[in-house]
Image (cartoon, rainbow, N blue to C red):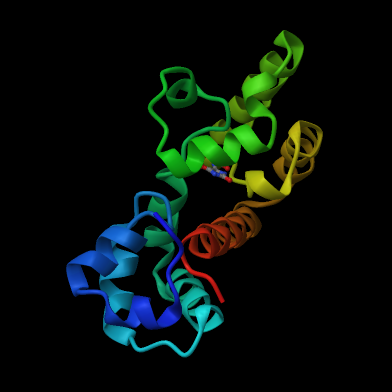
Length: 171
Ligand SMILES: NC(=O)N[C@H]1NC(=O)NC1=O
């Protein structure tokens, strides 16, 4: 798909808007359903801010659901080829398709430890990271408390979301 201008975005039918932006937050169609009604947007920054505000405004329970909808990095869905196209590309760009056997073991055990402490997967914007910084992030952030990690996870979802929008809309 060639990239859209903000004018194109403002002119999309509601259903088109929902399908184009339906996965800028992983598996969270309700964001695009709410945000389509806020058009017109002046520019792509305003559009990104609308999605970020959506993430700020939802309840803690909804935030947890957003976090839990993310796949593990290099986890079962990646191995089975069942990631969304966006997530597959992000994980590839971080080098997660080329892990050594040792890195894969380490990542799996740190992901598992993180998930058993917090009850949701470790989330990081893969396009802004590489294998080493992901492995290190899993160690540092494991020490955070629960509320801090919800906040950090949602912040990472915002970064992922912004980069996904910038793949769709140009300035
Ligand atoms: N677990 C996790 O961070 N997943 C995500 N990160 C990212 O950049 N894309 C994802 O699907």
